[in-house]
Length: 97
Image (cartoon, rainbow, N blue to C red; front, side, top):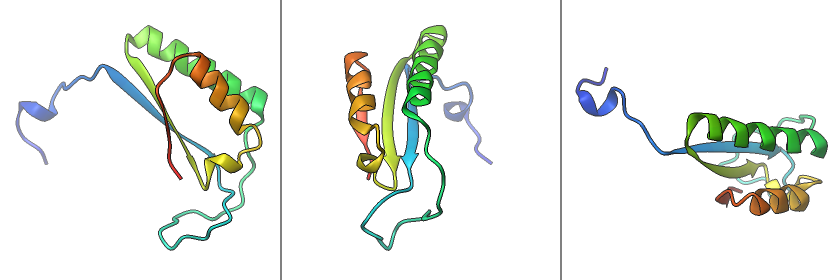
């Protein structure tokens, strides 16, 4: 395995949540690894996840970062509402599609 101090006890000031919002996507890209049919989290529950994430980051004293992914995260029914809530909370955001 790895030896040396660079891999032991390393800390970072940022915690990133890669949030898989949906498997829905119209493109059928060759690199796609998951085309299964899964239920999506209700928007009210997504807001709870966001609040839990904010609380976790505050407790751990780290900056948060969220990467919304999927399928195509833009196809999540509550995407724009969730996006606005993340932006309103000043959490850095990436979209992975």
